[in-house]
Image 1 (cartoon, rainbow, N blue to C red):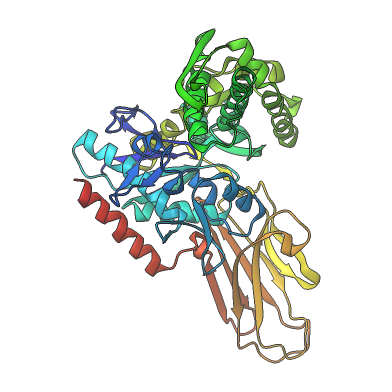
Image 2 (cartoon, rainbow, N blue to C red; image 1 turned 45 degrees about the vertical axis):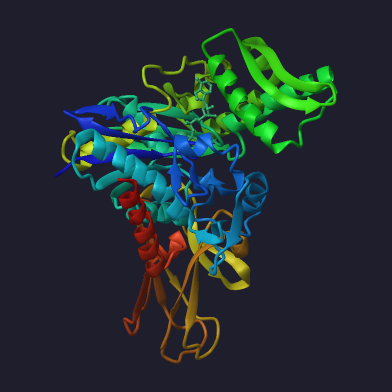
Length: 522
Ligand code: ADP
Ligand code: MG
């Protein structure tokens, strides 16, 4: 088997790793960096820029720079949080024919999976350049709470990028592998992942080599970008106090400030004090105004206190939901660039009483874990059993808009479950099954992941037919549903594979567009 790469497809940054002689190796990209910003941009020359190149020009090209696309994967345009995200990003979101959220740039619409594919392709090319050989097979990570649709969209993104996605694994599971959790040693782990835009907490148990995610929690609206924004607000206030100019509405000034704020924040993870310098930040009648400031670590912690405080509740909730004997975790693993901030590490220690594990770079842990899983699949590493759970309950819409649950959340996967349903009207010859994922008792509050019908039912009084519906969730967390009329043996089945929101023709077109870029670039 040829090399299998492990990819952490992050909201803010992505990373690729591979096992080389049994040791995980994080691969530097063409710019020499070990992580790649998850950004794609289109410029005046109709070129597509990916990674650092896209990040650098985001300031001057906000409407054509696509960031945080992971948040759009497998999501509906009308979802409230997607509408909210649309207000925050500089590019345009559009509703695709099936209600999915796509992005529009230069009058052209793109599925989120196609944008993600450009990032994945860059990761694949990074590995190909490094080894000088073609690479096709990959393991890609996703957050533990990702729904079927989001996992499907990730799979399709891999396909568009020319990858054969051998497995989708959960980010916390990958992190546990990276931290070298020993398979012969049972443990309860808590993965504390604070990235650029999201905060994820997962509790895992490891028993005889089985890695089981037993609880997940977090905050989808909390990450490093919020820390950057808090620093920016602080600096803008100071600037206004000094020069009497309010620049909070000046997009260009804000973009410049954002980069400086992030750099200062990162520096203060190792330094006690840093300075911020933005010459010609603004101009008024009395001439050019420069923004210069010094920021200490103590000031940073003060500014970010409200954000730091918000980390505590989700962390405690995950621990509570996990319901571990003794209520204690053996190890806390830090993941995500933001966990390098000393105040975050101190908070973790205060909440859990454990010193967080060190030794793995938090930016790289997930990709390293993915490469270990890749090694397992390639037969290079001794077999572990990775067991994940389904993050959301699965069921059907029943009479009275009720959710009839068939598989409860946190059930270990792969799993198969069946349930018998019947008709509600006399001589009913068709039943329409709506497959739902979510926790609400009210069907329409959950997300509809697929609809299918069982037709040509024999005429029977209401309630007499027995329709067996079988639900399968595979190792990647992908759902398969079939329904059988037990009398006639008449069967209908669906893989809920329209989750990516793309038809086969759309996928093919995206593959051509993405492939065309490779040729243009080389
Ligand atoms: P994601 O999982 O969302 O893709 P990452 O794990 O790469 O994100 O985390 C990115 C965030 O981590 C950014 O907000 C970045 O500014 C922050 N970060 C990176 N390095 C440091 C550091 N040394 N100190 C503080 N924050 C950091
Ligand atoms: Mg991450």
